[in-house]
Image (cartoon, rainbow, N blue to C red; front, side):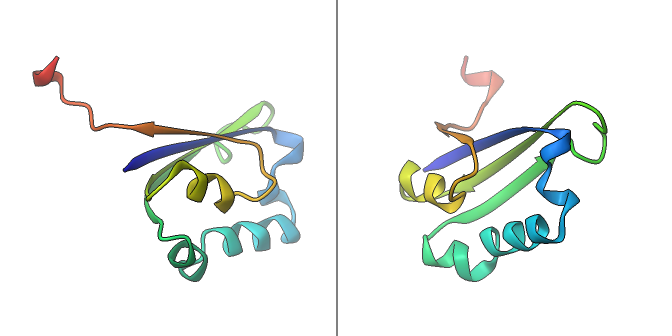
Amino acid sequence: MLFTAVNKHDSKECPLKTGEGVKMLKEIFSDKNLKKRNIDLLDAYISCPLEKHSTHTGVFIFRAESKYNVKSLFRSLDVEVKEVAPFNIENI
């Protein structure tokens, strides 16, 4: 199954601004941690470098067995996880 996970946070609270936050994100997205949950990170996009004084958004696309597996990956970070399907304009 495919899932998106979207995280939004104030630019002042961006985890990329602290060494501890960067370390946490590296652990979350480590190959070991992803494999432990049987998750493939397919793609990721962040607005952090572009939005200096507003709300940052991170969008992550995963292949996983369950929504729970994806949600548990983010620990206590606030993220919205949804199952999604590929979009094909020809099938509408």
